[in-house]
Amino acid sequence: MKLATLLRRAALPALLSATAWLAPMAHAETITMASTTSTEQSGLFSHLLPAFKKATGTDIKVVAQGTGQALDMARRGDADVLFVHDQAAEEKFVAEGYSKKRYPVMYNDFVLIGPADDPAGVKGDDIVAALSKLAQQNASFISRGDKSGTHAAELRFWKSAGVDDMGKGYKACGCGMGPALNMASSTGAYVLSDRGTWLSFKNPGNLKILVEGDKRLFNQYGVMVVNPEKFPHVKAKEAQQFVDWVTSPAGQDTIASYKVNGQQLFFPNADK
Image (tube, rainbow, N blue to C red):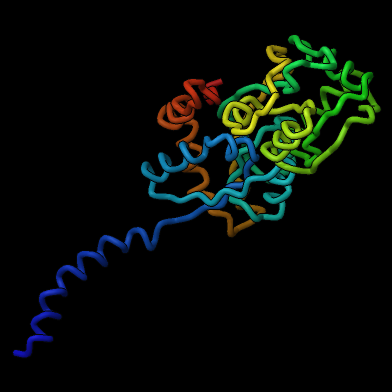
């Protein structure tokens, strides 16, 4: 028998073994998640999604954008599952029939960030009073301006403050939380942020938390499966699998275990 034939026969078992090992990976399901930038830019998904894949074998492709944009994406049928943080908008999404149920999953809070010397004198625990001062003094303020959950919360706070004119220092960047924080850091401006993204932010410069602790700053996150009755191509089974896992003790413990510099960024509350 020729040497080449012997070598081919010797290699065949190893080749078949490798092929058998790769086959499950080749058929691994991938679902698309539309989510807010805070869950990705805070590093949570880098911690959470590998644990989900290990438990289920399912991959998740994340499209991170403002909550409003994420909801619009799902309304077009371009996502299988949503992970966002604007409860009023989420409940409207369900009422419109784009999802059958909204599930609470975790929370953190918003904080007002600004220059350490606080030239506008807003430091404290009252977000409405702080924004009133910023508007009156034409203080430099960076708004997400992107229909995100953070932007929606900011607009609620301005409304509660009775402010229609945010002042000459107000600038909307139409950008994610990370870029907004970078702009504030480079210009010495005030900015509203979710605490998770702030704690994981690498370029704080002279910025620090100035307003926190106001109960109005509570920031709830929810998950929803896009309704397959509206979009038959939606991978509803796998999407529901993610929802079930992330609201289960295993998923909730994984969220709670994510910390940056020893600080927990998100707090599970699916049982609420």
